[in-house]
Image (tube, rainbow, N blue to C red; front, side, top):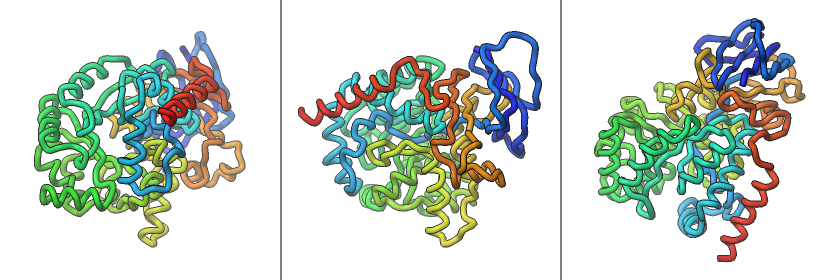
Length: 424
């Protein structure tokens, strides 16, 4: 598929490059040209006049549990531990591979409407999850989620090898659910696995004060310090949430090159707290943004997350200058890609994967065009996503999905899943 998008404002997100007027050309899933207007001879499958709307790299949802769409608005207004152990885990035990397939598809539809071109998905029944993404043409990075309730280290190793050779749209990173849900023997084996493959490691980390206190009681160390002490982060990795972090924790993140994936909507909805993003920024710690799952958010919307990343810092620090919107936009596009191991999807440059979104600037909330990038973070919304392209294929355009299956079928299947589980 050869596509030429011209008359476009373009924000490549490459270092020190401002928005310019030009065009972007795509062939076989790759960006073959981005720059000033330069129509080349030859055949194009499509030529799109962007009408001076904005092209930029797709947002990356760097932490989520996609198939949890089946629990959206099912168990709300509860503390994290009660929500997790009394509501979520019992229902998840009833999930079938078919449930995961259709519920992941539902999440992928929502990602597309929010300009998200890839997700970092920590869940179960990964074969179904991967198939859902491939069937739709969506990009997914799977993350290991072993814990005391399921999975083996041997199984994680098999998944690592299997899914990293599965399909160009699918990759896999080593991970486990959390320190507090995983016994020490398993954690040490996971650390050894990471060292065997010289691979980064990812986990939920320091989401609540109780989680941190429990780890200190068990091991005399915070989760970050303990996991680092057993060799978990010798090849990098990252933590999801990282709300309750000590200075020693942050120093380890900086030293080991760990990515912090912040999930502000989930953290405020579950009353977990506010991550110290401004401090992390000042230390040069890598930052990305995730929605978390649709049972704890409940909305898979990168615009809401971006606004909350900056707004929560401003109000908690009583400093309106905290966390500039441009830094937030970089977290959503570039930081997310690099945290997920998608270095070919971080910016709009020749040779990179064509994971591109178009933002409709011809909407009241985008006018006037005083600062387009800040408009996206402070006043942008899903209504501004005009097009979402993954791997050179347009999957969502002007409110219409092009994913090979009717949205109505996906909605019906997801509702069938939750209705069955309620009655089991």
